[in-house]
Image 1 (cartoon, rainbow, N blue to C red):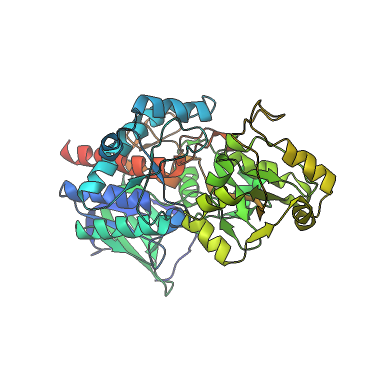
Image 2: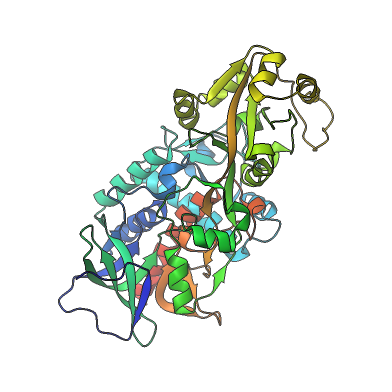
Length: 465
């Protein structure tokens, strides 16, 4: 039958008769859901992932696919000095102490276990070396060889299905059925023809989405991003928050999000921040720099949006262009016509449309030595020819959601856990605190992969209890 397609809770009603039953239903076949499914299947537990899209993708497929982890087998084999304690300190420091300590500890412990297990399943990872992302004190970004989120998603999906997980695509979950004890007993999902189908379950994991694709929620909860470009997945419609509000569950860190100050315009794509970290700068339409770019690409989104025309230019030189071209996102942006080249300062000023004297002053200040007016220290000056990419600030994904404990159990307002409802990834609060500057590079996939791993462990323990 065709029903309302808004997220809703159905209480104290008997689910339709003769519907299929599965031990665990996972809402969302993104990185979080797939990681959880792989661990569940390793434990011999049957599970079904309900995915709204025709092909699992989500926010991960739109990202670079870099998973931060300390203490993995691969990291150790490369002789890289790091520790989970240092990683946890980096996460906490970037969030200015606002990140939920119990989740920081749980996820930084879990993510290396997840990566080592995924490796054992045949997924190849590499550690990105040669530069550090903002806030990280060791090379700990793990990526598949293609260095894209789409390739990571393909590897996770292949591994999950090979392990025996079932993925039902084009299944948009809209109903959670609960009994009088707040136990989830079934879910309802909309099919492409508009009809709703149901499946019964013993346990439910919400691994679905944030709310970046819901303009009303963004305007309500993230007013600074009200008019920003949305670079995330449209499936981030806030379903988890809608269900949480209907359940009377606790919500947390709703002001936290990942912005990106390097959203290529008008092409609409991410440009790697590596070129900026290694010496590139952001220059506005007046020919001025306006922040310390090394603090992070997330808060850079707000700074860029505050500039004239809500745009800036990423400016870099030949060595940095070579570095940028090692990242597929930049290669695609260049193919789309994003890269401009200027033989000298005068040409660069004409490209930007700024006063040549002001631009000369700006570039002259980019030199090795003492910290500049923003506190940034450069290794060397930029040298002609110059390369530039026009960018704006964008919202990529949100970092707040259902409040959870360190077992990923969804919490009521009084802090007690709902009996069989878990959440992780975009559906739950992350480890970035309650504002944009708290986002440490990779926090999204830390929460997704680490959270999926922790949630699966909890589901396994609950079944054994």
